[in-house]
Length: 328
Image: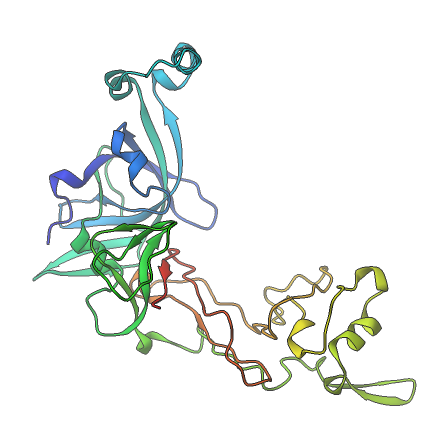
C-alpha cells in the first residue's frame, strides 16, 4: 500500500503554526482546476516524513488564496474579466495562483508492510519544509476509516454532500448527495468503549439531585409527578416560558451538562424541544494511546420515559470529525 502515489501528490509543507490547544500546520497547494469538483474542507491529507512510508495525517481546516492573481493588479484583472464576461485563462491561474491550506494535525500514519497501516496519535514529528503533501488514495482512506475491520457499522463516510457509497445498495441515495468511489463504511470498534470517555444514557432516573422532590412552604412537592408546563410556570417568569408545551415529559429539559467541569455556571437554563436527554458528563478530549481517528466516537443511545426509541441517533467524532450517513 503506497502512501504517496504520484497522482495523489498535490502540494508542499510550509511549517507548523500556533493553534491554541490544537496542532496546526500550513501547506501550499498550486492551483488545480479539479479542486472545485472534489471535497476539500475536511479532507484528509498526508505530509511526508523521513521516508514515503511515514506521514503526518491531518485534515483541512481552512483555505486562503495567494499569488499575483489574488491581490493588487491581479485582483483588478479578475474583476474586469467578470464584468466583461470574459473567461480567466487557465494558464494564468496555473502560473499566478496558489492556495495556503491550514490543517489540523491528527497524528502519524505508518506503512507497516503487508497492506496494513499503523496510526499513532503523536504530534512530535517535524516534516521538512517542502515535504510532499498528498490526498489519501482509496485504499488508505479505507484503512483510516476502518472499513476493513469486522466491527459495528456506523455509516458510509461522508464529506458534506459527497458520500462514499458507490455501488452500495444499503444507503438510500437522495437528490442532494454526490456519490463517490470507493464505497467506504465507517466502522466503530466496540471493544474500544471505555467508561472514562464513552457513556450510554437511559433517562430512567433523575440525573441530578435537583430532579426530584423538594419542600416549599411546608409542603413537599414531587416534580416528577407534575406536568412540564407546571414546572416551568413555577421556575421561570412568563416572558421566558416556551409557548406550546404539552404534557410530554421530554419537552421541558435543561440543555446544560450537570458535570461541574464543563458547565457554565453563569448561564441560565434553556429549554430543549427534543426528548428528555441530558448528558451528565461531556466526552473528554483524545490523548496519546487513544488509537486511530475512527476509534474516538462517543456513542450516545437514549430512550425516554415512555419507552419509545430516541428519534435521533447521534454519533460524533471529537477528534477528527468523521461524517457518516446511516444505513437505511
